[in-house]
Length: 526
Image (tube, rainbow, N blue to C red; front, side, top):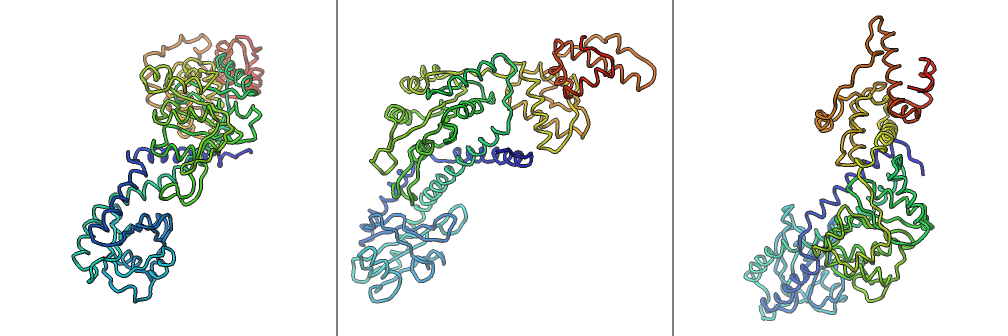
């Protein structure tokens, strides 16, 4: 689907923000998994009834993003979900007021506890309940409740104070579980959004290939697209690995199926299994519905595993089994799910080096790909720089709603000489910066280039001898005509007479160049 410049600009901004947010989520994740938290909370659920000489203990939380109260863990619940209302239940009253409560003789009084009795087949006689503080927002995130004191007098203030102290210790762990669940949900949504926006951006970006190296890579991509062979793309960051992966997918017979891009470095290790394999309802706390993983979501299509070298060693054996058996099980289920997808992997690291350092499994290395494509950095394919700069200039002009006339020759010289450590991504960013700083109708001048670009070239750029036709006097129009004639001749010389390349260097169209050549009486030779 074609996208106008406004949509592309919005997609670019959204993609960057979502990718950054996704990485931030990864950074704030703790080293504990949901199972670790669950084990710790369940320890309290088992021990507290004994400590209070009571029968049961239940932990409730407020679901993030809602006002709904639900049971998190509890004695004898066995997967039953108890949802006490804010009004009409003792737990709701404790959470709303933020104050603990002791209630005895409940078996003789009406209330929500009678409805809970129907679900759990358990009669509540008395209880002590205290709120669990929300440490980050200084509010309440849930409650902990002890039921049925064994002694005749029921619960008292001593029990209330002791449970309040326990709740203080629990608050940090409860909050970690809630955040962990929310991060899992957001991680799934963000990966989906980033993949979709990446697909849209790839469709809106030209794949320029003037250099011999890139032409050979595209030719290879076309040749291997027809077969289901797995592929490994190696190259520095910003060289366009995902664009090549998408090209292979679009040229294959899987083009009508999903292209699912997953950044292995952006998924926390403790979420890897649920992200890739999916999970069934009830597999862990917060799994309120069955969710498919990346392996299933890529059904019939292509799974692009970016930053594959960052795949944790603990997960590599599971990935190997998936690639060998073409099936796997969702978390919480023993039923195998068949998979059908093509794998294209990418990395900016040498996997052979990672294997030597015992950071990557050798058997997975040989299973991941049959064909390796090395994408050279931009500094090694300089024939692509100027055509790519021209393509980005047109694209950026449309997105920014600006009409910049082109590049000054000095700018193009800078572009050709600069090493571009950030590769295509850095070039595109530089063009965006230059278009933003240049007025409509003006030519991009070298002083507008970034300080990094100018400073790195300062020692390399040597002044050219002034050609005879540039030594002039007389009227300004005549002088300008001489300048334009000299620039066209020099551009044609550097381009070997190729008018298309010369026009790109001058920042004008080929038709525009032909008109100027005719006006200045030039025949195309320097």
